Length: 123
Ligand code: CUA
Image 1: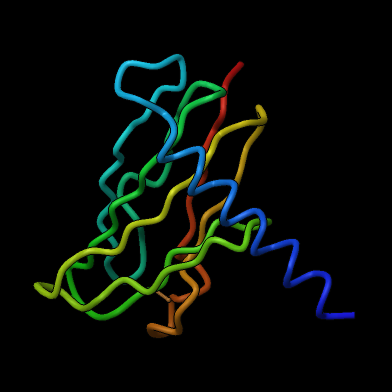
Image 2 (image 1 turned 90 degrees about the vertical axis):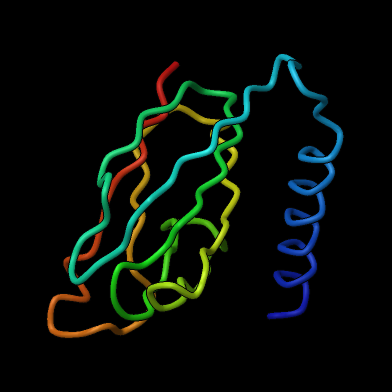
């Protein structure tokens, strides 16, 4: 049943947006910008640590070809444009402690499947 799933996903997206808009500067919900560089075949940094409750704004740019940036287990995925063509932004709400994997979601060459990293959400 694809329809209810899609609706629920849309709800999540709206909820994320509303939370983002409603959080004033200096509120209890911390925001953090994390800049990530993608290049064949790695992300740097490849490990990001944040405290639970942080809204992480990933700003990803490429140093070569176009890549993808996807957080496994979420529907968050963006295409990272080629070098010099800007950056892609992905918001991640670190609501639950644990380790999350991010990966390249666009075929970019022989080492595509090795392009991974982790987000560690600490209590
Ligand atoms: Cu980078 Cu696929």
